[in-house]
Structures are given as structure tokens and as C-alpha cells.
Length: 179
View 1 (tube, one colour):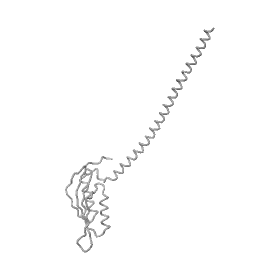
View 2: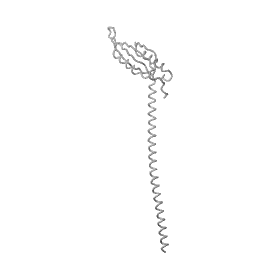
View 3: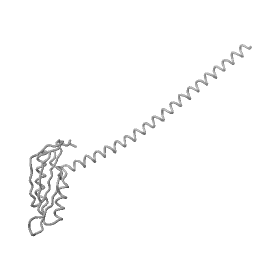
View 4: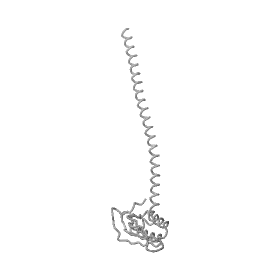
């Protein structure tokens, strides 16, 4: 009798222990699964946010590329850099009336192609002088690097002045990649 009671008690304790063990293992596994699931949800949210950021960055890059292409002259990819500088020189001569332009030879300098030049502009009106200098400063490709500007009074009774600009037209030595 005692043996059967003891056997029954041990069996019940074993069943309770196994059941408790299964419950503890199940709770542990479910807790780890929950943490893993929450971590996966956070990572997916981070991926979604990064995808939106990448999309916005791609749109920003496209906008910058379009801006750069708008700065380039239309002949940039079809003509050499020297031809581009000479075309800009022609534009300067056409836009600044009466300008006397003296150039020297092309010179490669620190990754750029430069064309040193001296521009002498006779003007009667200060506003015209400011507009001419503003035009020269607005050149993008090639751009005009001004080394020196000298304004002297012309030798006539009209009060005219002569503006002498010493500088160089510059352009990158290598073609900017097609954007």
C-alpha cells in the first residue's frame, strides 16, 4: 500500500514536473520568439525608413545633376575645351562693344585649360562699365578669373575712362562626365 501510494505520488510529481518543464520551456521559447519578432519589426521599419531616405536622396541627386547640366553650355560635349574657350571669347567680343582683347597661348594649369587675356574697355558711362564687369563675372563655362582691374582716365576732354582687365578664361582640363 505504501508502495502504491508512493508510486502514485512520484508519478504525479513526475507528471507535474514534466508539465512544468514544458510550460517553462514554452514560455521561454515564446518570449524569445516575441523579442525576435519585435526586433524583426523594428528592422523592417528601419529598412522602410532607409528606403524612403534613399528615394529622397536619389531625387536630390537627380536635381543636382539637372542643375549642373543647366550650367554647362550646349556645346560642352560636342566641342573641345579650347573651342569652348574661343567661343566664349567671341561672345565677350560681341557683348562688350569696343573692347580690345589681347590673348596669349593656351596654358594647362592644375587640371585646367587657361587662356590668359587682357581686355581694354573704353567707356563713357559708369553704369556701362559696371554692366560689362558684371557680364564678365557671370561667365560660367569657361569662367573668367580676374587677376587685376585698372581704371584710368582717357586722354580726351570727353571724360571717358578705360578699364583694363587682366585675367584668364578657365575651363576644367578634363570633360565632366555625362550626367
